[in-house]
Image 1: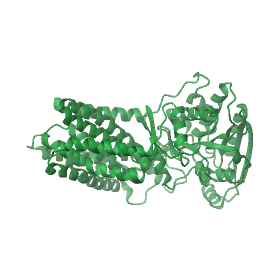
Image 2: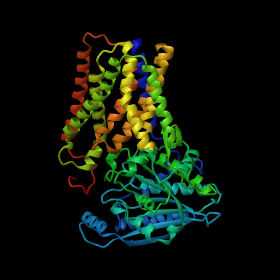
Image 3: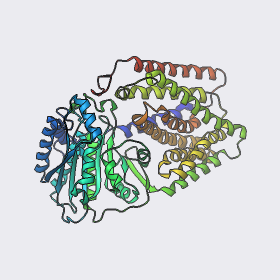
Image 4: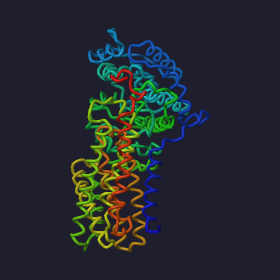
Length: 570
C-alpha cells in the first residue's frame, strides 16, 4: 500500500482542489453589512422580476420594466427610457414564439447616478431585462439585473459620492438579437458618456461566475481588475476562445465600437438555460453571490480611479482554484516553456532513446485512443442524429461522467503496461515532449492562451528534476504535490470546457487527460509484469461498460422537462 500512497495523495489532492475551484461561495445573509453584496437581499428582486416569462413586447415585460424603474429611482438614480422597433429577424422570431404578428419595440431603461466629476467618462453596468418565450429567466438575465441593483444599493450605502458617474443600462430585446444594445450604442446620445462597461450574463442556473471577455488591449484593465476584486475568477484563455466563437452578448455591440469592458457570466446547471424551470427557487444563490461580489468590487475600483486605464498589451491571467489571481506579460510565458523543457531535459538526460521514444508514443496513442472512444461514446449517446440542443444541455452532468470514464478507459489500456523504474525518467520526458512542442507553438501563436499547457508541464518537470537531483524519496513527494496542483487544474479546466462545449465537442477533454497522465505516471509504482495487461484490460472494460450504460441512458431517456418551450421537441 505504501507504494501507492503518493498516487492516492495526488489524486485526492487534485479532486479536492477541483471541488474548491468549482464550488460557489456561501450567499451573504440579509443582515450582512450594508456596504457588502448580499445574494439574499438580491433574491427579493429576483423573485419579483422572474415571477413569469417576460419577453419583449409582452404585458409582463411592461410590468417588469415598471418595477425596475421604481427600484432604480428608489436608489436615487434618474431613470429615462429609449426605444426602437425590433429588427425584421427579431420580429420574425417573436412572431413565431407567440403565434401572431404584432409589431414590437425594444424599450431600454437608462439610469444615472452623478459622480463628483460628471465630465469624466462614466461606468456603465449592463444586463438585459427581457427573457425568451416560456422561461421566467431567473438566471438569464434576472441574476444580472438583480446583481446590478444590489451593487448600486451597496455603493449608495457607503454614503460617499463616487468620483465618476455611474450609469445602468437594462436592455430589451437581447434574446431576439441584441436589439436594445444596438439601439443604445448606435442611436442614444447617452452612449457618448460611457467610458467602461461591466456586462452581466448567464447561460444556465449556477456555477462560478467568471470574467470571460474583455475589450481589446486589456493589459491595464486586467491589472486594475486583479488589484480590486477579492478572489476574482477568470482566464485569458476564455477571452481568447470567446473572441473566436460566433456567440454574442450585449457587450458585443459595444466592443465593436471599441468601448472597453468586462463581461461576466456563469454557465453551470446548463439544463436551466432558457428553461421553463428557470425559476427563482432553482437559481444557485452562490452563483449570484459570486457574480455580485466581483461586480461590486470592480465597480468601486472603476468609480474611484482618477483616470480609467488606457489600452496596453493583453495580459496573461488566470485564477488558481478561485483562491488567487495571477497576471503577467504575455512574453513571460516563454520563461515557463523554457523552464519546463529544461526541467524535463535534465530529468531525462542520459536516458535511452529506447525509453524516450516509447514515451512519445504513449502520449500520441493516449490522445488517439481517447479521441476515438470519446467520439464513439458521444455517438452512442445520440449525438449523431437530430438532437434537441436544450436536452443535450440537460444531459451534461451524465455526459461529463461518461467522458471521464472513457478517458479512464484509455488511460488504463495505455498506462497499464509495466514500466521499469529505471526507464521512467526518459519515458516521462518522452511523454511530455509532444506537449512541450504544442506549448511552444501556442506561446508563439496565442500567448495569452498557452498557460494551460506550460503550467502543468513546469510542475511535472520540477518533480521529475527533483527526483533525479535528490532521489525518489523527496522526488516522489514533490511529484505528488505537482500532480495534485497540475491535475487539479486540469480537472477544473476540463469541467469548464465540458460545461461550455462538451455535448458537441467532447474531444476538448484530450488536453486535460494527456497532461494529467504526464503528471500521474511517475507516481504509479512498478507493476509486476505477470498478469498486468490482463488486469488493465479488465479495469478498462469495467470503465467502458459504465460509460456505455450512461450513453444509452442519455440516448433513450425521455426529453428533459427543462427544454425550452419553443424548441421543436417540447
